Image 1 (spheres, rainbow, N blue to C red):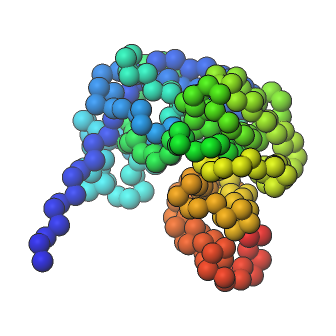
Image 2 (image 1 turned 90 degrees about the vertical axis):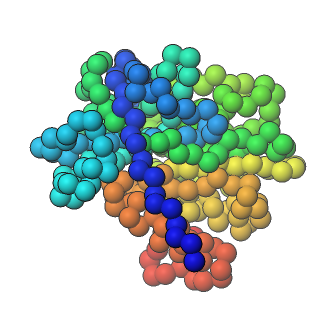
Length: 287
């Protein structure tokens, strides 16, 4: 049997902060630029994402920054910490990459960084990844998400041709978190307040009178409500798997490291419960 070719080392991109902007009380925009983006492109998917690489506390890495070398030479606890963020915009002409961050004070890693970072500072990242763009052959579109999915939904709506039929539901904490989106689609903003994340989204989609024809759906955000909407769309509405982009971007009570470590198993269990006829286990979230 022929040997597999060696995996090509992944090279990170390097960028400098160009400017920042507070979009709402809990959303911070960071625009990156510089010559390190010469080989970068993010213009095929509206859910493109990058994996930002934050130095471990106290770690000093050799230059040039090389993830493979760091992982070979440094103990695991000193490896860079990865955080994943959607590309809100990519300006190829000016080589500017726009990322939007949810910020809750000093909570987390990337949010506080985005809130305090200054122009000229450098950040390294991998990517882009991504798999979704609105299918122009669909009869209509359904876009659903919380704050974490807002950049991808906004970019998707802005990519839709004028007059495209679509329903968009975005859940945020309150009215101050709404954003202007350059689209003729009327976004339904749901204000969560003290209610559980995603509960209003599930209610809104359940109450929606689905138009006739083929729908192309994008549903992302906190894993528990995404699970419930997956059941509604796949099982109750019988929407084909290939017409759904649906996944948990995050899970309540888990940081990204913990969620990514368990996400594959979570997704497999959800699929077994919803499509394989298995019963939900114990006190698992409602399926």
